Length: 220
Ligand SMILES: C[S@@+](CC[C@H](N)C(=O)[O-])C[C@H]1O[C@@H](n2cnc3c(N)ncnc32)[C@H](O)[C@@H]1O
Image (cartoon, rainbow, N blue to C red; front, side):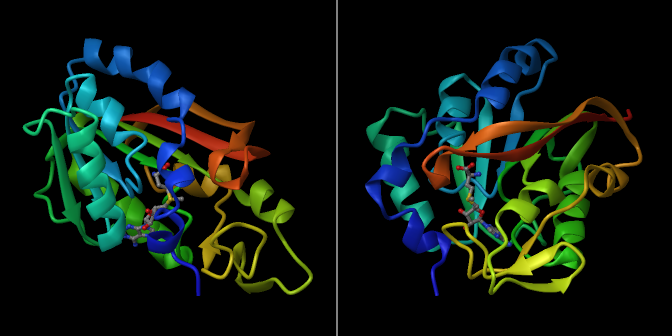
């Protein structure tokens, strides 16, 4: 069974470019006074590194030990200030942080991993650790993307929750929320962007798939 520990030991996968939508947002977040940032499901650190280098105090959380070990070495070799880049091994369903710990929470291509309940748990935790007034940036594969990665052997375990799909980690269970389903997890938020775009997927050789962008601010 392939997992992200295995996928991210490939050096190619450790050199993926950061998500351009997030990079565009960072100067704005700086201006808005954000300093403490969570990268939920940080993987090989393609966002944690630029976050720390841009002066944010960033925590990367992932459950894969080997991924975090490789990222730790990368942070050192690429000069990320040690006081700004921090790692924690944890499950995104139970984040090891107090409520209202962060003023920006980012989760990119991570909250698809699991079934519908897991997706809801991830969202609940992102909300819990975000301060009132804090910003949330989620980038994920919506139902439309799920439709495009179905294979003849794909099983639909519950609505929009698929296994055995055409992605590098396709043997793992994935939930592909509708845009409305994602928005519904954050009723107390002011939405700044909620849009599906066709975008290259770095883990899939830049093949294009619909991607859902959700940028919102928790009411203060
Ligand atoms: C597709 S990768 C994305 C990594 C990174 N956000 C990026 O965009 O490059 C998904 C990451 O989420 C992590 N992950 C998946 N489910 C998780 C969970 N329940 N708790 C913590 N990490 C999880 C995986 O280990 C993997 O590193």
